[in-house]
Length: 594
Image (tube, rainbow, N blue to C red):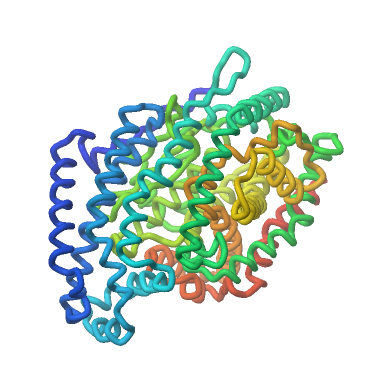
């Protein structure tokens, strides 16, 4: 394999020096005392506080949450670095249990705020100390109709570590321990999934078959996890009076059910002109009537294998960011200048990629599994976008810096688009330009079509689970039906593909998260069209400033307010069509190359 250069590994000492450090122990002891004192001082007393005092109490609450967030960020990142290490697993579980116990002391605060009448809140908000937290109060009070009494909320809160969280951990550790035989090697899930985009067709076939066979042999435990978590969610949704399995996610994302429904309907309606058309085109390039499923993300025959060193990837991404905004690139450069990225693949490390915001008093960290393919460069651009977004939103504070999932993908997908355009502009070889364009279309189909298909799969599973436990075979039947509908007749499936639903972590960790990717991609497509128009009119500086303001807003504004300066409205069905037209237009370009 080509030397990719020195791949960076993160250093978590900016959070805590070690798992057994005095600093970590002192923080746990301090916030335990602070949380108990907070409850003693303020429980059942919020209604009588004036605006200045109420604002000060929220600030105190925010500070306790900041420290809890720092502890759990350190624990989570340590665990992600080596999911297979039992000592680290115990440390992670212990930290979750300690923080759950501490946070239970201040659980009353949100609940009591939601018992205050609107007039009381309005009166308090006349003070600047409270007014500062208006977005957080808005979002907290949006949950009023679904909250339970304090005793029930505390029970659910404390049982979480022995319920959903424990099943999440079982999934993670099971996946981390699986090994997939290929030749004389036993590969991790991350290593073998990477081979599905290998240039060699036989390697892709053998890898795909091994994945399906190993997942199938472990389907019993994965179906148990899926059934248990779906039932757990159904019980809580019923007690909280959520009308559908996805409603709680939509509320958390601050997006209306009808907006999500409009997105889903638009994407499903576009299957023929997007995925069906593209995969039919790709089958033609491969000289077949239909592609085997392991060829769906295969590089085009004439492009060959392209491996990109870490330094080249860094320069490409930062260069693309810099062409758009020097400020954006400057923030991005800090991630490379400091040990904030963990890039190599290794035994036990969590698969995939993510950006963890940690807390505003620290900085984000990025986890990658970099193996030098163009898609890995795009993943770097994506996760760096998250990181930059989190840095820009940090000054909003611990309670208001986190962005709803529907908007959290904005900077990441926009960063991908900037990087793709830079790569395409620099490539002069026609075959490689075609390969880049095809790869971008596939990434967009994976982000939009595939994620909406995942959403439909989840919705079907959760709906059917309400009538009883689903067999692994029934879950697989639903998977195959929805995959066939979304990918179209030009993709040919084999029996082992039935088990591919088992490895998708979002189904386990964050039910109905997946539509946020499609939301973000379509949003960015529409946003990028505005940017291109601004370039034509020489008004791009104004666009850049408005874009940076959008990122700085963090969680303080809803999607309507954030998109209004760009003349966009996600509640308008035409908004989604505009975003999908960008994908269709790229497929048009590929067809024109024939």
